[in-house]
Length: 363
Image (cartoon, rainbow, N blue to C red; front, side, top):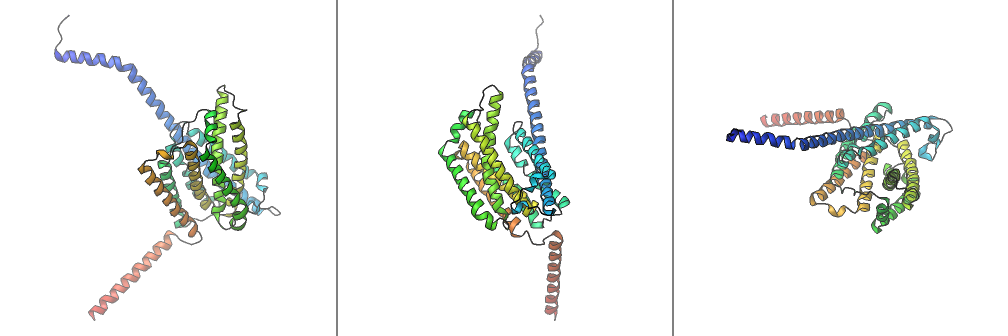
């Protein structure tokens, strides 16, 4: 065997190393490709979810308007349930169901940090569609409020405590019996009952926050129950029957009751108030209370850093400002043309005033 020079030896070593690492490199490339595919699927599902849910608000509102135009029918805002016989309303409910399923599936493919903020797209979808199909008008400050709702909610989600990884119904059962979560359930129940029996009859027809608060508070419990029910179904499919576990039954009953109350008061809000107002406020409050419920149930607020704490505070302040803009000026006629005209008129007045001052100085 002939002697190799230093350069030839290094080249031979490099070739041998590349051959030895080729299988590992292929595996890593395969894993990276799978992750990219999962990210793409999750992104598509999340966007599709927002499109379906945003559209569902418009279709359900169409059904409620059809009911309001029919003679002898009691509107949802007045306590009627005639919408249950309307196929347009059921189409909207079906769209919402498809959107929620897509949203749930998206979490299986990609991070919640991507899926949850994208839910804000439903606000934009409903606002755009309502102006075209419902002839509802959202003034300039309302549009700014929608944008602030999206930005504030996104900041809250990005800096909120992340939900723990629960893989067994028994573990979830222990967490559900923790004192902190039981106190939260008690507070939500008392607040909801007070809103339903005291404030809704008095202020529900004039203040959109009342109905939205009821939906959001009850919704935080329904999401927790849905997660528990989904976990029980998954374990049962895997061969570990959980259909007779107490957690399964509690979650099933809770889902039926909570979703029924949610739909009832959400329909009332949609029937009485502008869809472009209801959708962003509902998104903000619902997301906030779901994050609070998840944080308490999985005890992860203790893991917040100073940056996350500051981010949460900033997000909440942004949301508060957004809700103020949406409600305080919703009946005012404010548009780009009005603002532009006001600025032009003000500029003309300033220009005229400056000319007069110059003339006075000359004289």
